[in-house]
Image (cartoon, rainbow, N blue to C red; front, top):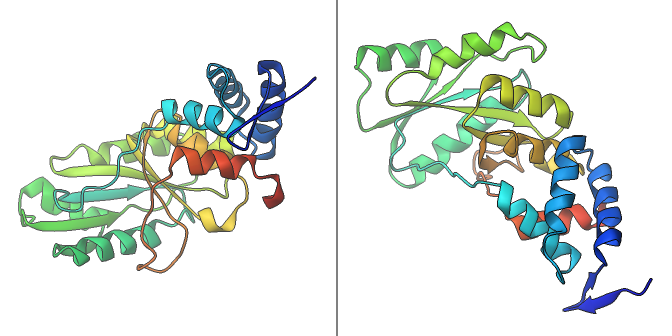
Length: 235
């Protein structure tokens, strides 16, 4: 079957596009239901190249929600042990300090106590790190979800791109994270966990590519993400 080229991008007949994208989803180990949904949605862009079609499908599902370093007062980072919460906390403090915010790093119990009593200074950004949890412990979800029900505090989930995508999807859903930060993006070629994290009911705050505080938290752009997913040379 002949294939057409538009703007240097291969344009597949829809049946071939489904097969091509399905192979990409499998390489990145996306959860099956999410992979099928993205392939169906990409097929709704008639005449588009594969990159453009996939980027359009991703854009429909990815909701960017970066941290507002000027307005945030309390950020509670919750995630499994080893997800990188301490690294993310240091990055948030670094970014906020650069714009002139007064900041404080705190354990969850001490920082939340100040918010509960109303004694946390209103101009201070307090970044709190909750204890890591075993993702197989279903009771942890109810315990941690109650921590963020305090005025001025937002809970942000921290998950690793190195983990299994199905497990990440389950964690985001169980903890009902409103926003997530995906770490260890520089240590994996598979994007399944990152996509599952921001397409399981949560908005995507940031992704992290480095361990140093000055390695700023970044955003995922659908076009660049689609190109990375379709780049077979990186696998």
